[in-house]
Length: 308
View 1 (tube, rainbow, N blue to C red):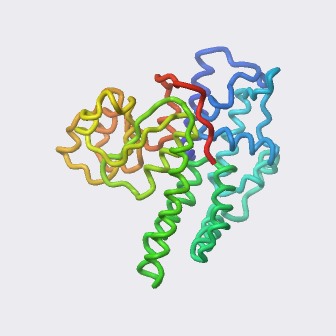
View 2: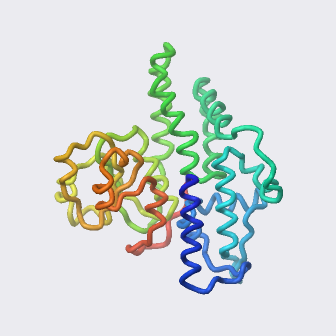
View 3: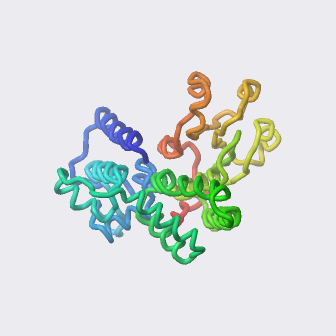
């Protein structure tokens, strides 16, 4: 969740309060999956914040299920704000009690350098440990934008800098793709959605989107790169709604094509196209913004587990 996203979270909560009586500060009203949908922080990470770092202590039902209050959700927004500024999760608790303190280093830059060194050294064990810790402790949108995307950009440019650059690129892009794609096989039943890309996107952008959706309780049918005519051909077989990751290179004729009703579009590259066109298609820059919208489909079974 970016800084703008965390602000939208706060605005949404204030809007909700204006329409209904606000609950008492300590009253637990949101189950963990709803908090995950609202904030973009998956359930595994919320539990890790509570157990490992003493952050966000929700109430419990008689059966032990977590219930989060409005105050808890506001604290999540504060935590996200610090993380976006480069503070590590281990430092956040002290900063919440003494907000005048300032971070002395950029945790994201340090993590990127450590991860890069593990890849250059062909140290898969260390790379897996770095990635596993990131995915457990931080919202995926931040991990993707601050570490994974810059890392992939470095890998794509290595062939210019090193004699083994092409080999490093091939090995580690393949490893990253496998690492995230395996969750498509392991996913449990959830809210069904068909995910595809339209236009030119990064080599891992679509599988990252699938991973993020699975973490939010969706059951993802991943199609890869498609065109609007494919949606017509697959009518009755591909499960609606369609979620389309917008890429670059779509001409005016492409943009005039029609998609099935209810199709949602997302992705930063959507900014390449005219604002009226984006608005007409209910476009959002990030998947977190799409996930925060009310769900119309019902899960076919129990909610999907959060990937790691």
